[in-house]
Image (cartoon, rainbow, N blue to C red; front, side):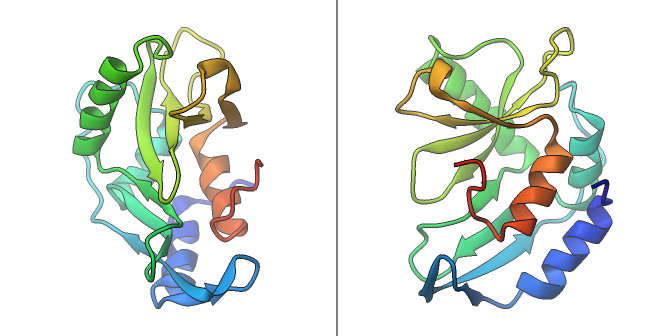
Length: 164
């Protein structure tokens, strides 16, 4: 699977701009995807190429957001809030933080954060980790080896946590 983000975002916009139910989750909830304007400046953070490709299209997004209760979905943070949330994470979770951790998203309705590894000297550069704020780092889940695979699989699974 090597879909371009233009194709993936286009499909999500076409199918999920208007809120609708996901039967596997709940028929009482409605979900949608929203995308922000893309950007071209990425500061001095060594983002992976696939991350940059997505953010040129959309500087953050709301994926499969529960528009009724606000208890489901993923917020991909814009670049400003990536820096803010990463700084907060460094301060609040200093025992679990390691160089190269960047908080790029928050799951609605629970304590999970989406973490992108950006230490270019490590094998896990570009990988995606789901970090629960209540758990130690050893319990966090490495869910994908790169951002592209995560977005494609999250979209394919209609916002469900396919790694659980």
